[in-house]
Each structure stands twice: as structure tokens, then as C-alpha cells.
Length: 188
Image 1 (tube, rainbow, N blue to C red):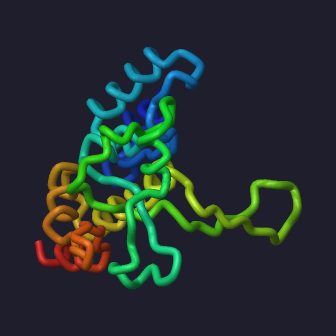
Image 2: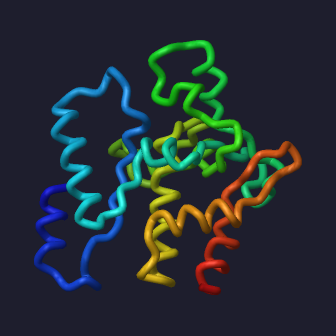
């Protein structure tokens, strides 16, 4: 992160790295390393104008994980993150249930097929439940698309656009609407 901050200090505005995401999930007691130093570095990055997207960001902005097994285009198929039920029963999970607000906007994380991290080529893995860290790259990617359309947007403005364009499914759940977000940014 410090190298990115240093890089941004020597390049033109149009060449700066504006968004950094890392899928840490939600900080928990099992994390190791110099967490205090990492938090200070993250604050330094934010102060330098870098948008940080991580598990904390999602919780702080009232975004929650979720997904649809059958039809990812049909918002009525979306449900909250599958791990929520388990987190009601067990302690020590990445995202305590109490931090998942009832009216949060669902960002896809569950039911993922991904390239295998094993050494075999051309293999894929399917994950029934991933966790909130699976929503982090989705949100960072949407922020990046928004900035490609309007490079002057601030994070607070992007969040407001996402909130204002969210769709509501038949179960009353709010679902992120990337098409609506992009159309809204184009209209600014």
C-alpha cells in the first residue's frame, strides 16, 4: 500500500491508482500480523485520495453479501449471504450477524464459479457460499466503472448513486443495480 501511495505522489492525476480492494472479509480475532500498522497505512491511503474497498467498507456503507443460485439476472431469486444463518449460531465468523443491517443493499458473493487456485490448468471451482470478501471485488469493479464515466466522483457520491438505484425484490430485499448505476452516472 505504501508503494501505491508513493507511486501516486510522482505521477500525473490521470495515471494515479484511485481504488484498491482487498478481500480480507471482516477483521476477526484470527487475523495475524501488524494490524495496527495496517490500519494506519489504510488511513494514510484514504487521506491521499485512494478509495479503499474491503470488508469493513461494505459493512460501514450498509452493503451486504448475497446471491442467486438459479438466475443471477432475476433479482427475485436473490437472498442474503448464506453464512448469515450460521453466524447467528456461532461466534468468531468474519461477519457477525449484528453487523448485517436488515435494509442493506445486497452485492453478489454467493454461488460463484472461479478459476481454480490449484496447479491444474483449465479447472474451475464452484463455491456455494463465499462470504463478504466475495462482494469486495464486485463493488470495487463497479466503483471503477463509475470513475471511468465520471472521474470526479467521490466515494460518498458513488455510494449515494448505488443506494438511489437499488432494486427491491419480491421479498423486500434491496439488490445492487449496476445497469441503473451506470445510467445514473452517465446522466450526471
